[in-house]
Amino acid sequence: MITQKLIYERPFIKKMNAGLMNKFGTRTEFQALKYIDGVSVKSLLAEYGSPVFVLSEKQIRRNYQNAVRSFKTRYPKVQFAWSYKTNYINAVCNVFHQEGSWAEVVSGFEYRKALGNGVPGNKIIFNGPDKHPEDILLAIKNDSLLHIDHFDELYSLIELCDTQDKKPRVAIRVNMDTGVYPIWDRFGFNYENGQAWNAITKIIGSGKLKLVGLHCHIGTYMLATSAYAIAASKLCELATNCKNQLHTPIQYLDLGGGFPSTNTLRGAYLPGVDTVPSVDDFAEAITSTILAHGFKQDELPLLILESGRVLIDDAGYLLGTVLANKRLSDGRRATIMDFGVNILFTAFWYEHKISPAQDFTHHSEDMVLYGPLCMNIDVVRESVNLPLLNRGDNVVVHKVGAYNMTQWMQFISMRPNVVMIDEKGNPHLIRKAETLGYLEMQEETPTHLKSINL
Amino acid sequence: MKLKKNIATSENGFIFNPATGDSFSSNPIAAEILQMMKDGKSSSQIKAELLDKYHVEELQLERDWDDWMSQLKDANLLEQ
Image (cartoon, rainbow over all chains, first blue to last red; front, side, top):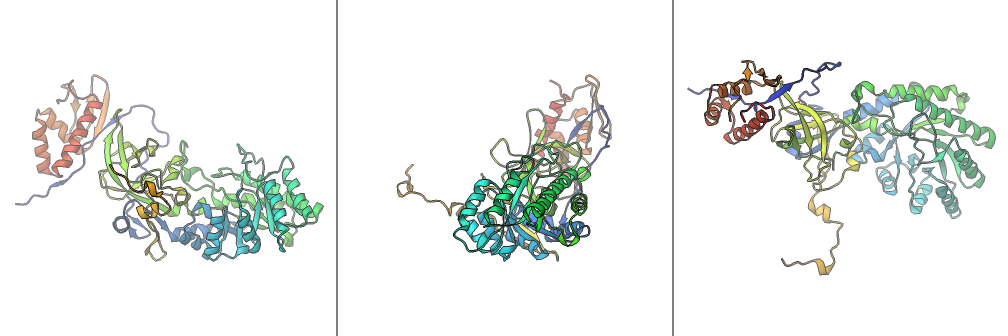
């Protein structure tokens, strides 16, 4: 007679703490996530290897359309510009461009990437403190919007214009006190001490530049909508002064980005989903301030947003595999994953939600999640409660779409495949995993170091 | 390695150490192993029974057994 053996789970005990009750009740954060947009996690891992980044095209479009709707239902002239530094894989950029987004870039290579993606030059916003002369000349030729960051850039731009027969369209980046500290004053010209106004008068006085916009970017992962209302109000004030005192109407106000995703910040008391204001809240604060400022209806400036994180973070997943389990000297469980902080850079500031990708029992344990790097700082989660994971089990890290695929690095292990699932549920490889050949492509070894004899 | 004599266990996996006041919960297989340990079975006997009853490789069980012992040791449930 064949007897069916029982399903095995490793033996496990958990100390019961008879202390204060958690006032939020007990919560089980984990639920198995076996499918992403209808595609099985196991099949993605089998086809593209582990770890692998997965992006949902459907979710990106949904996020974009929702954000645009939040603003357009409140304000007549709105334009989004995709923040390339958040995720500049071409397939990702083109989803946003197909939806109608311009490009917002902060370096020469990002600028050329946007051109390569087919974005017309006059729909590229060029930000950042490091624009090289050849990049600026290219941007002038293409009639792009140059956002000036500091006086040295302003003076060199005026100088460059002597060699050009075209008047570049420019804006200045303004930094200001919005009630959120520390103030991001390293970028742009300060509003309160008159630096911004000084720059504006210099631009108009030069006669060589066309001031068309005012820009600010007050911070990142901003949790206060009131800060945006203050920022919008100060930009409106500058715009009105430009028109009244310098007879230069401002065509657009660019409120930058900085809207948070629903990720939970490290050390936060409550989860991000419960604390983060929605795009609607930010839209309400910004648009109601501009509308109340007193612009004539036909003189309302175009409102530009450069959101990145909020539009893509929750469309990205990182799938990975358990390499090993061990116990630390103090008895804590440690689980080693095959992905580390070199590809999950945001683990430094978020407590990423992590789900198992297979069924499990109701038993769970507290553990530290480590990456595979031979490096002490490689900690994915300091403390997380997860089911009993075994070697070879798979997990899904949520909300990793922003910054990881640009700030990642090949350190000890290389950057993995990136897959995008289209709206019909078909996965596409959009960036290949790196190889040793790719890594060494840029290296040059001097002849006398080519051979060794050990 | 033997369980301390005064450790109280229940069928549904509740463990109580009267010497320290600590209590623990456990999963069903842990409760089963504890019972076998209390019955005085040796580790090799227990492992053989588990291999017979559960769908698990010997190597996997061996690894988990070491971890199980360290959990009991950390919880101060073993005889010194």
